[in-house]
Image (cartoon, rainbow, N blue to C red; front, side, top):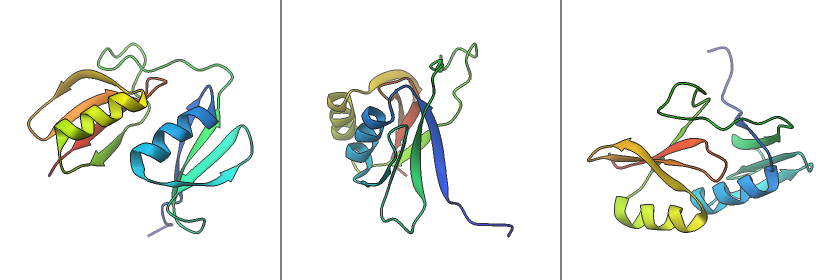
Length: 118
């Protein structure tokens, strides 16, 4: 092992707004806020997700490869239907794709993520 996972960094136009979406989706808390850099996680000393302001941001066009997906999260859930309803209420939108055990969505600024049951 060379190191340990520290965090996932997501470029976005508004770190405050997108971090709010993921806090509600994942049940995390804000652990750092520097305005253009916001981090959420379980605790300050554990890996988290950082949202970094990008002055020039171009949303992924998945599944169209014109603009690659850049990253995506798999979020494990118990009930796909109920979880879909809740993420749509938070501002996500459903994308093409999915199957019996997963559904594909975009967060409010276009990053793909999946709800999965396994």
